[in-house]
Picture 1: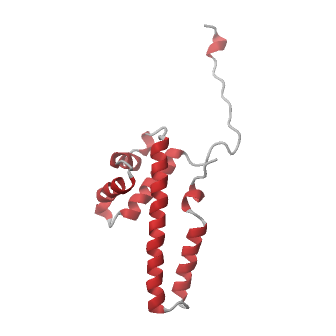
Picture 2 (picture 1 turned 30 degrees about the vertical axis):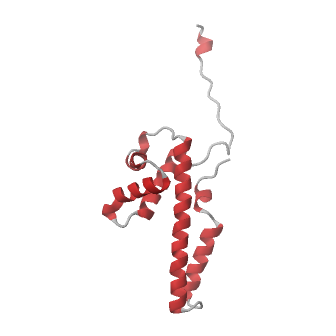
Picture 3 (picture 1 turned 45 degrees about the vertical axis):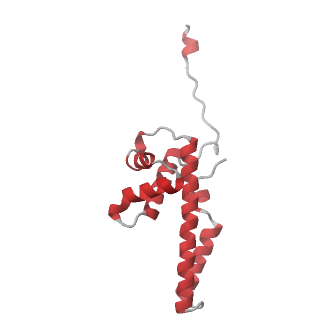
Length: 140
């Protein structure tokens, strides 16, 4: 082998080809936020991760590794990434429905013209128009 065949050529990727956030970092963020949305308090992380595993099919140990050992991941499989993304979107939709229910209760108690009700409705409408997954990680 000659020296020329062993040389490595480093090429930069054009702008816009790589996302600002790596897939592993995004998956770890989705996993943390999913657990936060499902937990009932500081000591409920394991139960929340088990519930996510049952409901969405995201393995408990994958969630655990993304939470506590994310730095060791160099890459993440597309199946895991897509499951986390779908779980995150479904949980956000669930949280929006819960919030909508809370707003309807507040509307009945305080009236639709109350300042807090109007602000909550505006926040809910904003969450419907700007989906969290699209803002944080766009696929090209």
